[in-house]
Image 1 (tube, one colour):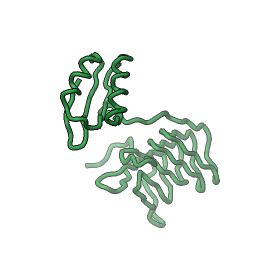
Image 2 (cartoon, helix red, strand yellow):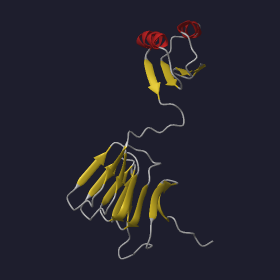
Image 3 (spheres, one colour):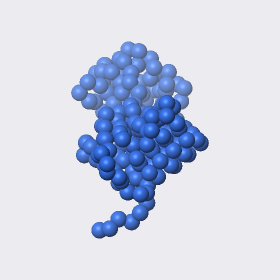
Length: 183
C-alpha cells in the first residue's frame, strides 16, 4: 500500500497485500480528505468493505492503474463500408475492406483500414490524442483524432502505400508506414 497526501485528496494505491486493519490504521491518522484509489492487485472483500465505508464518509474516486489505457474491445468489420454507413465504437475499429466516400467510422480507440480510406475517420473520439488512423491507402478528405482535424489539400495525391496519421505536437501528421525512408 502506498499513501500520499495531495492538495485536495489522499492518493491510495492498493497492491493486494493490505489487511482491513492496516487500511483503517493508516487512514485514521490522516485528515478526512476524499480518497483517490488505484487498485494494482487483487484486493480482499474485507478490504473493499472498509474502503467503501471510508468512501461514504470521505468521498471516493477510483483511478485506472497507472500505465494502462482502457479501450474496451476491438470491433472487426469484414466488409467494405459504403456511403451512408456509420460505425461507432467505444474501442478500436478494424475494417477489412474499404471505407468509401460518404461512410463514417468513429472510434474511441484506433482506426485501422485494410483497404482504402476515402470516408470520414474520427479516432480517439473521447479525447484520446494517442489514438492513430492507419490505412493501406489514406485518401480521405478529412480525418479527425481527438479534437484535431486535418483536411487533404486539393488535387494533391499522397504516397501509394500504407500511411499512419497521429497527433504530434498538437497537430495531425501523416507518415508512410512499412517502407524504409530515405535519410
